[in-house]
Length: 152
Length: 152
DNA sequence: TTAAGTGCAAATTCTTTGCAGATTA
DNA sequence: TAATCTGCAAAGAATTTGCACTTAA
Image (tube, rainbow over all chains, first blue to last red; front, side):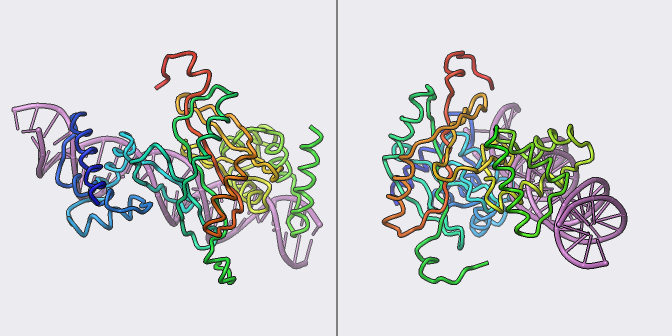
């Protein structure tokens, strides 16, 4: 809870450093985004902030997300559902990845430090300097395995 | 070379089993796709096959790619350049992954069996059954590291 | 006051589909 | 000949931008 507040302040401060303003609308959007621990797309975040301030437009939400990505506070993820999704990027040390169910679409996060070793190894031979990665494992989740009825 | 031919025959044969026809246009498209070892998007493949048969339309290329994906002969990859790209999927045993340069956009493939262990481990706790994965490591390639001048 | 922020509508861009005519088995 | 295939054009859908007005510093 407190951690989110700290992260938000860090964002606002970093934006200020770059001559960007802390408008009330942008502030609402950032607050809502940081508060949410989900993988929202622009539309979903828009639906949330609209409840706080009905005057906020979709485009502002969209531009704010792009801003966060640009300054490294968010990252774009792709779960093959047709949307660009965004998630908070506040702990670069051990980046988490995703298990995505190809039946129900549910997303589970997981972390494994082994990915860092794999990254290093893969990069060593080619002298490629890794900056960030994206790992998505698609499969069948526990729920769907139990209830054997296929959805679609 | 011969391996590509074998793979192509396998595709045609599998499609036939499902009542799908080996039309000359589809044949050209599959040939061109299998011959290419790159990560083409629909437009790029279209440009290639057009040289072979100017009468082939973009939509046919697009639909053929979707067909190959549906039957497991191709897989879609996303390098964050705004296009859905396609690559041959002929060796499911050890799936390869990608190193993508965020400066010049070059793509290098790599393989590491460790990814399989990581998949298993990540899946064990959550009782998630992995089917396929996607791992992209973004960073700076050897070339770009040497020539220090940044390309936008 | 002045540079950044915002909403609206419209433009872009990639992807997908309907349908009538062509082609394959 | 009967079902599949194909091209065209147009629709869809997500993303992005131009521009005039608003707001923060």
